[in-house]
Image (cartoon, rainbow, N blue to C red):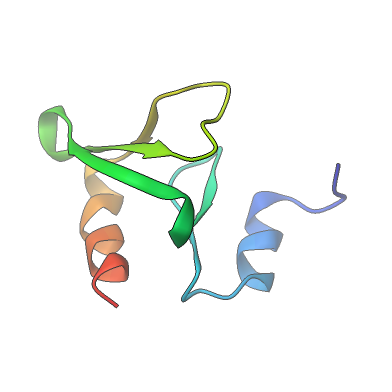
Length: 72
């Protein structure tokens, strides 16, 4: 357990390797195994190792930023 919020952690981590995909997850680029299109412009990630909640969804608003980040 950490004494930091995800917001604080996201500022501490290397932005080339880590991306905050939603309110619950910050993902490492190497943990992303599959990116699926989801309804209404959202994205669904499959990660390894898989989290307890298997569906990691990126909102329509963050999807463009995420795609740009993945293009690095």
